[in-house]
Image 1 (cartoon, rainbow, N blue to C red):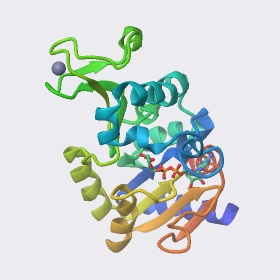
Image 2: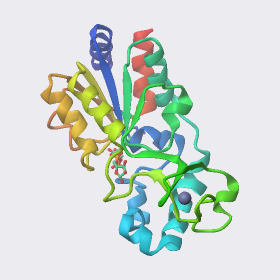
Image 3: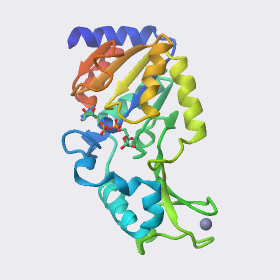
Image 4: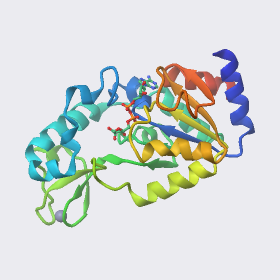
Length: 245
Ligand code: APR
Ligand code: ZN
């Protein structure tokens, strides 16, 4: 691992543009379970709760599970060393952006400024009729399903449900970053969910060196990954940061 870390540090130091691509794995050390694999949420809950049609036809049932997963449980999670290192790398101009599949806001809370949220963010709710957005406050969940205070319609979390389109701006900026990075660091993703999972592939097609950080192999490892740093994101990124300092 040591030699690989040295190689990665040199690559980042000599890179014109480095982008990070993160999945649920980067937040596991913050206590947020992944969706798949060991302790995965989809082993415990039915993903149907994030299906748009199910949500509209069963708002109360869907909301009670969404609240349990994303608000009761996730709500108090704090950023970890991995998020901190990416924010530090950005500050020292070693990293130009984070493309994240995560909705937990932990990159921003760790100090990252340029974060493209491919699947939206759980910290705001959006009205399904007038599109007004509301911050999450305690009384929002007093009565489920939460309703819009402006027009009375159903509110939904401002993250992407299965069957929903990707936020236009996040999508464009992610594609642009993937097409123009010479180093692309893939952290904590199985690479299972399209179109997010295509970002590392686009980066590779445009000549990027793919560095992957994950304790397990993923859909990328035997394919596009050039350097596989097998380990936990917090530990591996801490070693990378020490090498950069
Ligand atoms: N450090 C780094 N990676 C880790 C760690 C860790 N400490 N612990 C687990 N992992 C890895 C797992 O090995 C796995 O490859 O994180 C990955 C988690 O995979 P998924 O749960 O599939 O997460 P992700 O790839 O982000 O899922 C994509 O699926 O349900 C949708 O919208 C949801 O954004 C999510 C998307
Ligand atoms: Zn409304």
